[in-house]
Length: 357
Image 1 (tube, rainbow, N blue to C red):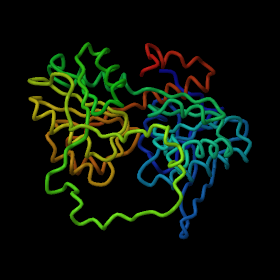
Image 2 (cartoon, one colour):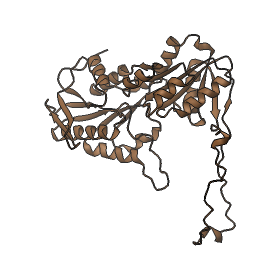
Image 3 (cartoon, helix red, strand yellow):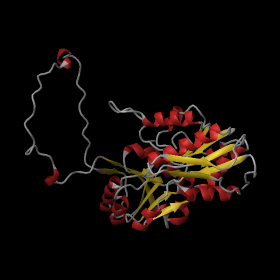
Image 4 (tube, one colour):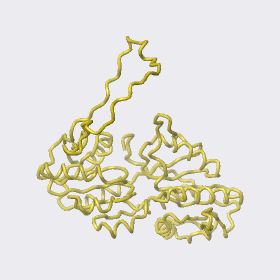
């Protein structure tokens, strides 16, 4: 692969994922720029850019970890420091975009991903490289170009090379919302598809029977709906117990998703698949947040391997759960950086990618 020139481009990194930044810079044949990013005793973020960035293209590599708010502040301060130092372009390389799951309005909440997009643009970022956004519409929140790369090719290659007898596998969506992604994997691997629908049924002892509930409070406030008797009332949703649509008996089950954060839903899906006769169970996702007790739950679950990419650091989680395997995606990120710097087309990185991917 071609490398970056020694002059004209600078690559900086925050403290979120220095290992990935080192991999990218080594593939590009350049050293990381000299930038000191630290916190003062009062937790304020400080950035000192030691290299000259005047008239240069600056690439800032920063992902989102458990310390997400500090990661965001490091990115914003670094981008603004380069902007005020007369950098020509400032490209944010953010493999996992923080707050990407908060992209919809919920009651009186906020669309936080849009707020973050505006903050990044105001800080000086002129281009964004990210990977596998859960909602592709998030790209519209930014006033700058966004390249949403896909890690599917690396995960598919892992299935072909590292899962014995993968032709006897079935791709599983743990809920209908991930069915499109699972269908894409199944079609590319020429495998069958199964979808899990419903919610895990509670034990009878855990069910809420109202025995210890307080008496209902009769509201005496004005109810405007009482005047519109002709308007039909929307029935409340009630999900059925967990069930599998598709045959997994005697097969290898591969659960695919975009993010693994809390592992409860994956564990419940794996237990159901084991009950239905799956003799091996794999879990695959692009981003492995693995928050809270996720490593312990995955280690105790009937799961053979958990495959994630290195968009997020998870070395500590791998010590707690040896089942976790890492797929390196630095090759795609470094190629995207090289193409953007050389003003080359990015279409090669999006070949054979459909709207559903």
